[in-house]
Length: 148
Image (cartoon, rainbow, N blue to C red; front, side, top):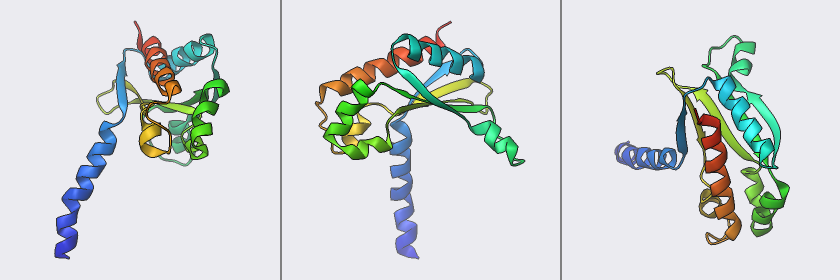
């Protein structure tokens, strides 16, 4: 039991490190409008929105409450394939995903994993040039979604 109690701070510090590896931005728009703006920016950039998952709608369908929360799944096979050629297991994180949600304070947030995570989580070289493209695209697309 003593060993478990000593391990808890180590486990919690690992969880905090994982949470800090998300990029989070605040949107002045509602969840629905932010998702619509993000989807339009993705399409305009030549990528494809593959799906939108309405997490709050799913929760409501089983009688549970969840603040407005939607996931946008998108990508461009010309880009994502280069990552998967380095490590097919990167397909666990592709296509790209951005979650848009209403936080407890009522503000709309969007969050995504930075492209550098592919090198951290998979056997993808950190200096793979396409990671810079993905990083830039994620920043540009999400910034367009939250622009006033």
